[in-house]
Length: 93
Image (cartoon, rainbow, N blue to C red; front, side, top):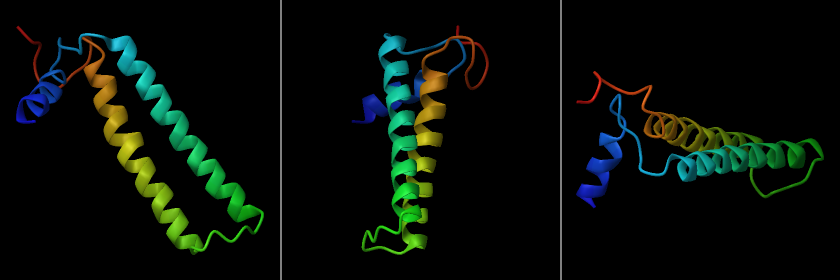
């Protein structure tokens, strides 16, 4: 587990990237699409007065939290990890 975490952080260095960036870019697109879909579904349900058994504030918090976790953390990691042109720190040797 620690080795995988170390490798996940190493690919963030400038000049490094994952071995198969196309797969990770496809996953990044899928996560972004799912996040947008969930936000849309929650918004539509609320707009049509559908009672989901939770308050508007709870729906909003869940959607914002989910978007923050997947949309920000994964999206930033995937962007850095799939490109050799951007990254954290100096150029890899």
